[in-house]
Length: 267
Image 1 (tube, rainbow, N blue to C red):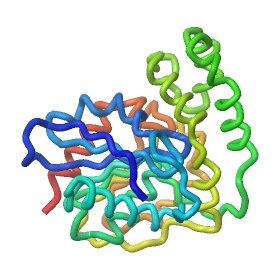
Image 2: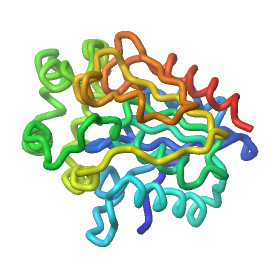
Image 3: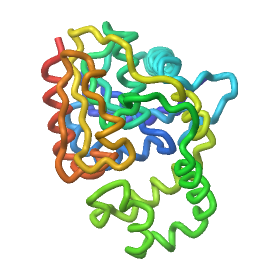
Image 4: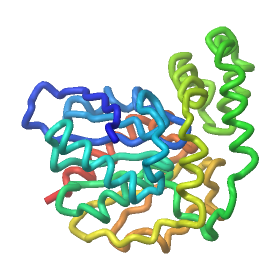
């Protein structure tokens, strides 16, 4: 299937490409805070995964991370002519990004996985009820979101559990995130694609990797969802202070710094 991909060009077609992969219930718009910090160094491609953002859900498309990894690489080459690229992904997208590196080490120049899913001690055998509630709430309140999100109490309700820095989130960020969650028919298909699975692929040591978690990640807490022993042996594991499940929202400058450093190590 064809993915919606947003291209933010550097101006120099010879500049390296970086592919940004969002999390479950999110969209390419999630990368807006990070893009200004990287557009001077990369041609940026932001992907909408199936059933998210502007990409429709296809019942014929497998939603497990490895299948999505292959789908992204196929679209990059066939639609944009991109064969080599850096990768940054968040949550579900972080897992997908790592699978791309495992499957296509000759194409991936570096990976930064932000709060990646798949590093849990025990696999999930069913969807978590709280996530179903979150999706339903966003869908039922999307009409009122443009008004409600002008108030601090609404932003606190929606984002306090996501980030310790929710008070600093812009109105646009909050509105984009709410709309993305509401308009994600692929949300439950994404959940089902991760059930009974963990990240256990091998990545060639030639691919530089950073795995970056926030110190206040309530979505994938450290005790049960951040098993360092599962990461590639050569990967660098980073904990960002005052950051939650979306470090590119909390500390975009710091995240950009790590991305540039990892990219500089590519061969």
